[in-house]
Image (tube, rainbow, N blue to C red; front, side, top):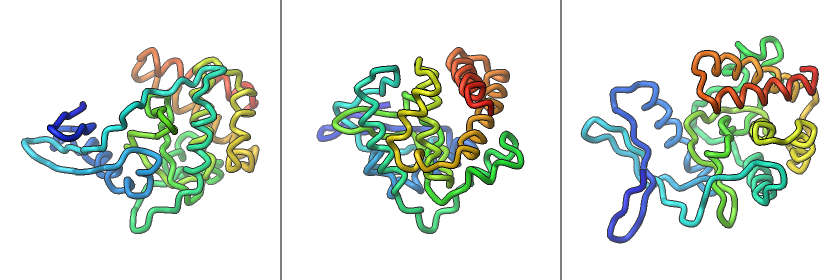
Length: 226
């Protein structure tokens, strides 16, 4: 929701204050904003009032949701953002979940290959990428410590969903040094785990977009033989 005042505009994210899981994700997002704000949107206030937990962000004027389809002019800006994201310092004094922990159920004994000390967004769908003079990554509800290439692989998955062949999405990812240096076995572990994860998600909640991501994940897994 956008809030207008006499002098400014703010983007608000509010959840019921008695919804423990939603409040937890709000706290995560507030906790890591000082680290990611230059690549996201600055958090200006976090309040609980009248039964709501509310985050207030600076409004990003002139931004729109990203286009991840083949030939999109947004892709170079997104690659620039991902290169900068991979270089961010680990946030000090912040206790985040890790990729091996979150993906243990889906990656099994290969989950350790996703480990690292880079903060990852882990939900890099087009709706969470805003395009203006540069690309911004918003909605940090699930920040996780993992390998520096994780978010680039996440964007590649949604590029496949948007019409790219897996080999072309992987070739695009090579422009991000962290992804280019990722061990092949580790990327395969990520791809295989996402195929299992999104099959589970779409089976439990058959919204069309979730089914689309599940199909893209299976297509990528088949391409890699993962």
